[in-house]
Image (cartoon, one colour):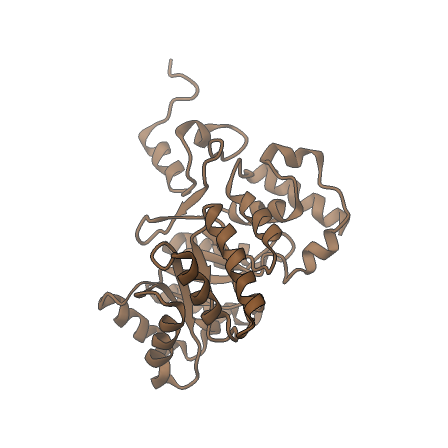
Length: 314
Protein backbone atom coordinates (compact mmCIF):
# COMPACT_ATOMS: atom_id res chain seq x y z
CA UNK A 1 0.00 0.00 0.00
CA UNK A 2 1.29 3.44 -0.89
CA UNK A 3 2.17 5.80 1.93
CA UNK A 4 -0.64 8.36 2.38
CA UNK A 5 1.81 11.19 1.71
CA UNK A 6 3.40 9.77 -1.42
CA UNK A 7 2.91 11.83 -4.58
CA UNK A 8 2.28 10.75 -8.11
CA UNK A 9 4.38 12.56 -10.69
CA UNK A 10 1.26 14.22 -12.09
CA UNK A 11 0.10 15.44 -8.68
CA UNK A 12 3.60 16.66 -7.87
CA UNK A 13 3.68 18.76 -11.04
CA UNK A 14 0.23 20.13 -10.32
CA UNK A 15 1.40 21.28 -6.92
CA UNK A 16 4.50 22.88 -8.36
CA UNK A 17 2.30 24.75 -10.83
CA UNK A 18 0.84 26.69 -7.90
CA UNK A 19 4.15 28.55 -7.94
CA UNK A 20 4.59 28.68 -4.17
CA UNK A 21 8.16 28.29 -2.98
CA UNK A 22 8.96 25.86 -0.18
CA UNK A 23 9.85 22.22 0.22
CA UNK A 24 7.73 19.22 -0.63
CA UNK A 25 6.68 18.98 2.99
CA UNK A 26 5.19 22.45 2.72
CA UNK A 27 3.32 21.59 -0.45
CA UNK A 28 1.63 18.45 0.83
CA UNK A 29 0.70 19.67 4.27
CA UNK A 30 -3.06 19.23 4.51
CA UNK A 31 -4.00 22.69 5.78
CA UNK A 32 -1.71 25.45 4.54
CA UNK A 33 0.77 26.19 1.77
CA UNK A 34 3.96 26.53 3.78
CA UNK A 35 7.38 28.04 3.34
CA UNK A 36 10.09 26.99 5.74
CA UNK A 37 11.06 29.23 8.66
CA UNK A 38 12.73 32.35 7.33
CA UNK A 39 12.13 31.29 3.73
CA UNK A 40 11.01 34.05 1.39
CA UNK A 41 7.82 33.08 -0.43
CA UNK A 42 8.15 33.45 -4.18
CA UNK A 43 5.92 32.63 -7.10
CA UNK A 44 6.77 31.88 -10.70
CA UNK A 45 6.19 34.16 -13.67
CA UNK A 46 4.41 31.68 -15.98
CA UNK A 47 6.06 32.84 -19.21
CA UNK A 48 9.59 32.29 -17.90
CA UNK A 49 9.38 30.38 -14.59
CA UNK A 50 11.47 33.13 -12.99
CA UNK A 51 10.42 33.39 -9.36
CA UNK A 52 9.77 36.69 -7.60
CA UNK A 53 8.74 37.56 -4.01
CA UNK A 54 4.99 37.75 -3.51
CA UNK A 55 5.17 41.27 -2.07
CA UNK A 56 6.49 44.17 -4.10
CA UNK A 57 6.44 47.92 -3.58
CA UNK A 58 4.11 50.43 -5.22
CA UNK A 59 4.88 54.13 -5.58
CA UNK A 60 1.60 55.82 -6.50
CA UNK A 61 1.22 59.00 -4.37
CA UNK A 62 3.74 57.82 -1.78
CA UNK A 63 6.98 58.57 -3.66
CA UNK A 64 5.88 61.85 -5.27
CA UNK A 65 8.24 63.98 -3.16
CA UNK A 66 9.75 66.30 -5.77
CA UNK A 67 13.20 67.62 -4.88
CA UNK A 68 12.56 67.71 -1.14
CA UNK A 69 15.69 66.29 0.54
CA UNK A 70 13.75 64.91 3.51
CA UNK A 71 11.25 63.24 1.19
CA UNK A 72 13.98 61.69 -0.94
CA UNK A 73 15.74 60.31 2.12
CA UNK A 74 12.46 58.87 3.37
CA UNK A 75 11.89 57.11 0.03
CA UNK A 76 15.43 55.77 0.29
CA UNK A 77 14.80 54.49 3.81
CA UNK A 78 11.56 52.76 2.79
CA UNK A 79 13.30 51.10 -0.14
CA UNK A 80 16.27 50.10 2.02
CA UNK A 81 14.03 48.16 4.39
CA UNK A 82 12.09 46.72 1.46
CA UNK A 83 15.28 45.29 -0.04
CA UNK A 84 16.58 44.18 3.37
CA UNK A 85 13.40 42.11 3.83
CA UNK A 86 13.95 40.36 0.49
CA UNK A 87 11.82 42.53 -1.80
CA UNK A 88 12.74 43.06 -5.44
CA UNK A 89 9.81 44.40 -7.53
CA UNK A 90 9.17 48.14 -7.48
CA UNK A 91 6.36 49.51 -9.64
CA UNK A 92 5.94 53.06 -10.92
CA UNK A 93 4.52 55.17 -13.75
CA UNK A 94 4.97 58.55 -15.44
CA UNK A 95 1.52 59.27 -13.96
CA UNK A 96 2.97 59.26 -10.43
CA UNK A 97 4.53 62.72 -10.44
CA UNK A 98 8.15 62.67 -9.31
CA UNK A 99 8.06 59.05 -8.13
CA UNK A 100 10.38 57.82 -10.88
CA UNK A 101 13.24 60.25 -10.12
CA UNK A 102 12.80 59.50 -6.40
CA UNK A 103 13.14 55.78 -7.10
CA UNK A 104 16.23 56.43 -9.21
CA UNK A 105 17.75 58.54 -6.44
CA UNK A 106 17.21 55.77 -3.90
CA UNK A 107 18.36 52.95 -6.19
CA UNK A 108 21.58 54.83 -6.92
CA UNK A 109 22.21 55.62 -3.26
CA UNK A 110 21.49 52.03 -2.20
CA UNK A 111 23.49 50.57 -5.13
CA UNK A 112 20.46 48.48 -6.13
CA UNK A 113 20.07 49.38 -9.81
CA UNK A 114 21.10 45.84 -10.77
CA UNK A 115 19.14 43.99 -8.08
CA UNK A 116 15.75 45.68 -8.46
CA UNK A 117 12.97 44.10 -10.53
CA UNK A 118 12.00 47.31 -12.30
CA UNK A 119 8.36 47.60 -13.35
CA UNK A 120 7.13 50.77 -15.01
CA UNK A 121 4.47 51.89 -17.47
CA UNK A 122 3.89 53.79 -20.68
CA UNK A 123 1.14 56.37 -20.23
CA UNK A 124 0.55 58.79 -23.08
CA UNK A 125 -2.24 59.47 -25.54
CA UNK A 126 0.37 60.61 -28.10
CA UNK A 127 1.05 57.21 -29.61
CA UNK A 128 4.31 58.21 -31.30
CA UNK A 129 5.71 59.43 -27.96
CA UNK A 130 5.71 56.03 -26.26
CA UNK A 131 9.37 55.14 -26.90
CA UNK A 132 10.55 58.59 -25.82
CA UNK A 133 8.57 58.40 -22.60
CA UNK A 134 9.93 54.93 -21.82
CA UNK A 135 13.48 56.12 -22.36
CA UNK A 136 12.92 59.13 -20.10
CA UNK A 137 11.55 56.79 -17.42
CA UNK A 138 14.61 54.55 -17.77
CA UNK A 139 16.89 57.52 -17.24
CA UNK A 140 14.94 58.55 -14.16
CA UNK A 141 15.32 55.04 -12.72
CA UNK A 142 19.03 54.90 -13.68
CA UNK A 143 18.68 51.27 -14.80
CA UNK A 144 20.13 49.72 -17.94
CA UNK A 145 16.70 48.49 -19.03
CA UNK A 146 13.33 47.69 -17.50
CA UNK A 147 12.38 44.21 -16.42
CA UNK A 148 8.69 44.89 -17.01
CA UNK A 149 6.99 47.60 -19.04
CA UNK A 150 3.21 47.89 -18.91
CA UNK A 151 0.55 49.87 -20.76
CA UNK A 152 -0.99 52.02 -18.01
CA UNK A 153 -4.80 51.95 -17.67
CA UNK A 154 -5.15 50.64 -21.24
CA UNK A 155 -4.31 54.11 -22.64
CA UNK A 156 -3.86 53.71 -26.43
CA UNK A 157 -2.99 50.09 -25.74
CA UNK A 158 -3.35 48.92 -29.36
CA UNK A 159 -0.32 51.01 -30.36
CA UNK A 160 1.75 50.88 -27.19
CA UNK A 161 1.51 47.10 -26.86
CA UNK A 162 3.13 46.73 -30.28
CA UNK A 163 5.94 49.02 -29.16
CA UNK A 164 6.51 46.94 -26.04
CA UNK A 165 6.54 43.61 -27.86
CA UNK A 166 9.03 45.05 -30.35
CA UNK A 167 11.26 46.27 -27.51
CA UNK A 168 11.07 42.85 -25.88
CA UNK A 169 12.12 41.20 -29.12
CA UNK A 170 15.04 43.64 -29.32
CA UNK A 171 16.13 42.79 -25.78
CA UNK A 172 15.30 46.25 -24.42
CA UNK A 173 12.92 44.88 -21.78
CA UNK A 174 12.12 41.41 -20.46
CA UNK A 175 8.37 41.34 -19.89
CA UNK A 176 5.28 43.03 -21.34
CA UNK A 177 2.12 43.82 -19.38
CA UNK A 178 -1.02 45.92 -19.20
CA UNK A 179 -2.75 47.49 -16.21
CA UNK A 180 -5.89 49.03 -14.83
CA UNK A 181 -7.09 50.14 -11.43
CA UNK A 182 -10.65 50.74 -12.60
CA UNK A 183 -13.42 48.14 -12.56
CA UNK A 184 -15.13 49.82 -15.52
CA UNK A 185 -12.20 48.72 -17.71
CA UNK A 186 -12.38 45.03 -16.83
CA UNK A 187 -14.31 44.02 -19.95
CA UNK A 188 -11.74 45.65 -22.20
CA UNK A 189 -8.89 44.24 -20.14
CA UNK A 190 -10.38 40.77 -20.42
CA UNK A 191 -10.47 41.09 -24.21
CA UNK A 192 -6.78 42.08 -24.27
CA UNK A 193 -5.87 39.16 -22.03
CA UNK A 194 -7.68 36.77 -24.36
CA UNK A 195 -5.89 37.95 -27.50
CA UNK A 196 -2.42 39.25 -26.60
CA UNK A 197 0.56 37.13 -25.44
CA UNK A 198 1.04 39.09 -22.22
CA UNK A 199 3.60 38.25 -19.55
CA UNK A 200 1.87 40.31 -16.85
CA UNK A 201 -1.46 41.90 -16.07
CA UNK A 202 -2.15 44.28 -13.20
CA UNK A 203 -5.47 45.14 -11.54
CA UNK A 204 -7.08 45.73 -8.13
CA UNK A 205 -8.12 42.98 -5.72
CA UNK A 206 -8.57 42.67 -1.97
CA UNK A 207 -10.54 40.72 0.61
CA UNK A 208 -13.61 42.95 0.11
CA UNK A 209 -13.39 43.68 -3.63
CA UNK A 210 -13.32 40.20 -5.12
CA UNK A 211 -15.05 40.71 -8.49
CA UNK A 212 -11.90 39.69 -10.40
CA UNK A 213 -12.18 36.17 -8.95
CA UNK A 214 -15.02 35.47 -11.39
CA UNK A 215 -13.29 36.15 -14.71
CA UNK A 216 -9.92 37.91 -14.69
CA UNK A 217 -8.03 35.71 -12.24
CA UNK A 218 -9.20 32.42 -13.82
CA UNK A 219 -8.38 33.80 -17.27
CA UNK A 220 -4.88 34.81 -16.17
CA UNK A 221 -4.32 31.32 -14.79
CA UNK A 222 -5.59 29.72 -18.00
CA UNK A 223 -3.51 31.97 -20.25
CA UNK A 224 -0.33 31.75 -18.18
CA UNK A 225 -0.21 35.46 -17.33
CA UNK A 226 1.44 36.68 -14.13
CA UNK A 227 -0.82 38.87 -11.98
CA UNK A 228 0.21 41.97 -10.03
CA UNK A 229 -2.35 43.29 -7.56
CA UNK A 230 -2.60 47.02 -6.92
CA UNK A 231 -4.60 48.83 -4.22
CA UNK A 232 -4.55 45.83 -1.85
CA UNK A 233 -5.72 48.05 1.04
CA UNK A 234 -8.18 50.19 -0.98
CA UNK A 235 -5.65 53.03 -0.76
CA UNK A 236 -5.58 52.64 3.02
CA UNK A 237 -9.35 52.75 3.55
CA UNK A 238 -9.51 49.06 4.41
CA UNK A 239 -6.78 49.41 7.04
CA UNK A 240 -8.61 52.38 8.54
CA UNK A 241 -11.86 50.38 8.79
CA UNK A 242 -10.10 47.53 10.57
CA UNK A 243 -8.05 49.73 12.87
CA UNK A 244 -8.64 48.77 16.49
CA UNK A 245 -10.55 45.61 15.62
CA UNK A 246 -9.03 42.32 16.80
CA UNK A 247 -7.47 39.77 14.52
CA UNK A 248 -9.02 36.31 14.90
CA UNK A 249 -7.12 33.98 17.19
CA UNK A 250 -6.51 31.61 14.29
CA UNK A 251 -4.57 34.29 12.39
CA UNK A 252 -1.52 32.90 14.21
CA UNK A 253 -1.94 29.69 12.16
CA UNK A 254 -0.74 31.66 9.13
CA UNK A 255 1.75 33.72 11.15
CA UNK A 256 -0.23 36.97 10.96
CA UNK A 257 0.14 39.44 13.80
CA UNK A 258 -1.12 42.54 11.97
CA UNK A 259 -3.96 43.42 9.62
CA UNK A 260 -1.63 44.30 6.71
CA UNK A 261 -0.05 40.83 6.78
CA UNK A 262 -3.49 39.22 7.11
CA UNK A 263 -4.90 41.14 4.12
CA UNK A 264 -1.84 40.62 1.95
CA UNK A 265 -1.65 36.90 2.66
CA UNK A 266 -5.25 36.57 1.58
CA UNK A 267 -4.39 38.19 -1.76
CA UNK A 268 -1.15 36.40 -2.59
CA UNK A 269 -2.51 33.00 -1.56
CA UNK A 270 -4.84 33.03 -4.56
CA UNK A 271 -3.36 30.53 -7.04
CA UNK A 272 -3.47 33.05 -9.92
CA UNK A 273 -1.85 35.96 -8.06
CA UNK A 274 1.89 36.43 -8.46
CA UNK A 275 2.60 39.59 -6.49
CA UNK A 276 0.91 42.43 -4.59
CA UNK A 277 2.35 45.95 -4.55
CA UNK A 278 1.26 47.93 -1.48
CA UNK A 279 2.55 51.50 -1.38
CA UNK A 280 3.69 53.29 1.76
CA UNK A 281 5.68 56.25 3.05
CA UNK A 282 6.54 54.62 6.38
CA UNK A 283 9.35 52.23 7.21
CA UNK A 284 7.28 50.40 9.83
CA UNK A 285 4.55 49.82 7.27
CA UNK A 286 6.89 48.36 4.69
CA UNK A 287 8.26 46.04 7.38
CA UNK A 288 4.72 44.93 8.21
CA UNK A 289 3.89 44.39 4.56
CA UNK A 290 6.99 42.32 3.93
CA UNK A 291 6.10 39.94 6.76
CA UNK A 292 3.48 38.55 4.38
CA UNK A 293 6.41 37.12 2.40
CA UNK A 294 7.19 34.66 5.19
CA UNK A 295 5.48 31.76 6.94
CA UNK A 296 2.38 29.81 5.89
CA UNK A 297 -0.10 30.96 3.28
CA UNK A 298 -3.80 30.21 3.79
CA UNK A 299 -5.42 27.42 1.81
CA UNK A 300 -8.91 27.60 0.29
CA UNK A 301 -10.65 26.73 3.55
CA UNK A 302 -8.73 29.35 5.50
CA UNK A 303 -9.35 31.98 2.81
CA UNK A 304 -13.08 31.43 3.28
CA UNK A 305 -12.76 31.92 7.02
CA UNK A 306 -10.80 35.13 6.43
CA UNK A 307 -13.54 36.53 4.18
CA UNK A 308 -16.30 35.62 6.63
CA UNK A 309 -14.48 37.19 9.57
CA UNK A 310 -13.69 40.49 7.84
CA UNK A 311 -17.19 40.85 6.39
CA UNK A 312 -18.70 40.40 9.84
CA UNK A 313 -16.60 43.10 11.54
CA UNK A 314 -16.66 45.78 8.82
